[in-house]
Amino acid sequence: MKPIILGISHRTAPLEVRERLSVSAERLPSALEALAKPFGHAVIVSTCNRTEFYTMADASAGQRDAWMAFLEQLYPLGAGSIERYFYRYEGPDAVRHLFRVASGLDSLLVGETQVLGQVRSAFSAATLAGTVHDPLGKMFHQALRVGKRVHTETRLSRNGLSISAACIHLARQTLGNLAGKRAVVIGAGQAGKLAARALSQAKLESLVITNRTFQRAQDLVAEVGATGAEPFESLHALLADADVVVSATESPGTVITRGLLEAIRISQKPLVLMDIAIPRDVDPDVRTLPYVSLFDLDDFNEIAALHRHEQDEESARAEGIVEEEVAQFQTWWDGLAIQPAVASLQQQAEAVRQREFARALRRLQELSPEQQVVLEDMSRALVQKLLHAPITTIKSSGNQEQLKLFRELFQLPVDAPGQARGHHLQDKD
Image 1 (cartoon, helix red, strand yellow):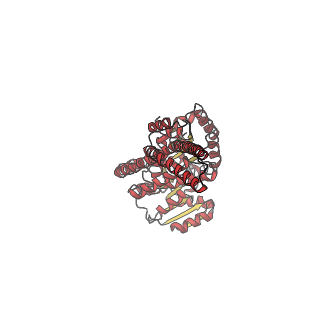
Image 2 (cartoon, rainbow, N blue to C red):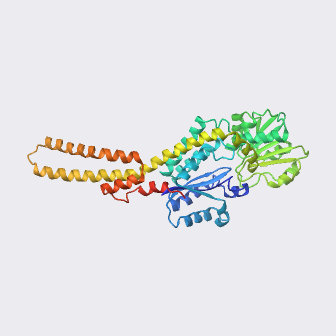
Image 3 (cartoon, helix red, strand yellow):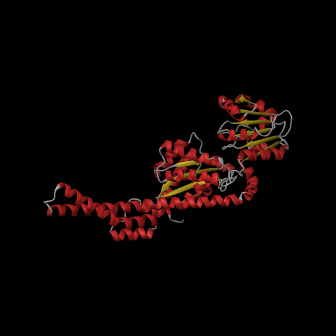
């Protein structure tokens, strides 16, 4: 068995594909169940720029069929038509990829910190669903620690540019000074919260938050110091007079259309629309309106490219931390193969000790109970001391060749649990 990732991201699929293949919070429990059914393990990380499926599997011939059946069940549009967008990582490459994701190194905007919380949420959801167990659970626990290390020990996140900060950058690039402008944030989830917090620092004339659940909008107003909250039913009135709109709902369909804007915008003053939702909240046809500047997640690529250049030095330090942590995980993984061999040797030695101790007692029947205890303690100590050196050596080596020799030398079973797992993690595909 080895960890396997199947996924798509901003690197492999355009936005229109990513939004079709995202896994909403409502679908997540059933998707986890469907993935865990053939593989036994399942974690799904679905964010605005990636959807990734994590599991454990062997190299059996039926593995690809199981993946295709899962994709067909999750995406009835036909797995064959979407397969080309997916990447796949196995063994150490899968471990490295997850650690890079949690660290913000694989993000569109390198160094952003929101993804660490998204990985934590994905792990929590899988834990709640009962679809994640060690060693995959260990891998996610360590990934969260790696993300924290990178944020603490490098300036990657401190120099990082978040999606919300990029929204402000694009709004200023389009409208100039935002002082005196009116902004609206649609959605009070995590993405909406980050956008509202960034906009609250922009010296706007007003910042209004709207959400389908009005109480959540009110709570966010109090948290970020916005001007006020409005019921979702007031959206049309808010759009009629806004200068900047950031939409980050979890709606399955569009919230803003060209027809809506044409109907409600009496004046044609410039409007900047930021659609950071997956699936998209804004119909792309809105771009054809001359007074509208629409930016979606794929429009952040240019900013991301400039930002990556500025982050090169900190990224290199973060990559070093990732490699160090991958090596630590490899050591732990190798221990999964070594421990059964050690346990087998200890059991074998104990069986011999008990047999020889019983034989000695039959020949020394005049021994008192106290003397028998001394003799048995001596036999135990002798076995422990004889085994100490070979066990310590094999535990510290983590070497598969030495493990093979260790098994042959002590005539241990070659099919002890865990041996294949340690071997497969080292496979390079």
